[in-house]
Every structure is written in structure tokens, then in C-alpha cells.
Image (cartoon, rainbow, N blue to C red; front, top):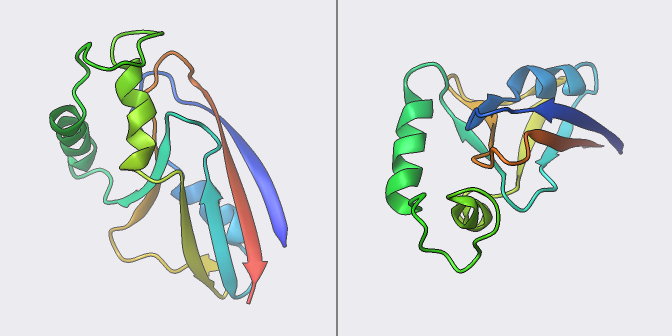
Length: 133
């Protein structure tokens, strides 16, 4: 097993593309599985198409599903922070990818992304783990 922790600063971005970092991590590791995990209570990992407007569509969908409004019992932090703590129930904090010949076996339009609405804490970690098959 190989593991590595990425340190990221997300700022006010909802979506951060992790695909290049995942590809570098898997490079020359052969066949196996790559697990991508975010050890945070207000962020998740998803597979989406990037660069086609999907990031804005995701932001709009999250606002409809989990409004930023002050309606949550969890109320410390900025407006919407309660929503941020509910997000991982809908956007998992992890994803496992097949790796073939040292490359993540993603679909043509799939990208691995960090979904992080929590602007109160822009410093994030993502743990990548590779298990050979």
C-alpha cells in the first residue's frame, strides 16, 4: 500500500479538480485501486465533468437541495456553515477508482473533484491511497 496526503487551499472555490494529482500519484504503480479520501466534516469527493458548466450546475443544485439560509441547528461559523456539515451525507468524503497500467480508469468526461463549500476553512487535505491488485 502507498499513501500520500495532498495539502490544498480552496479559497472560495466550491469545486477543485484533483484529477491531475490523482493521475500523478497512480503513475507507474501498475494495476490496483486508488482511494481518494477527504478527512473533513464539510467536504466531499465526486466524479463529475468539469469545464462544461457542471461546476455552476452543481453549485445551483446544492443550493436547491441544501440552502445556505440560516435554518440549521448547527449555527456557528458563517451563514451556510450548518449546510456545509450536512453536505458529506450527499457528497461522499471518499471515492475508490480502478487503476489500470498506472492510470486511473476514468470515463472520457469524468474528473475527480473536491467539493468544498466551507469558505471558513480554505486549507484542506486529501489522502490518496493505492493498493496494488
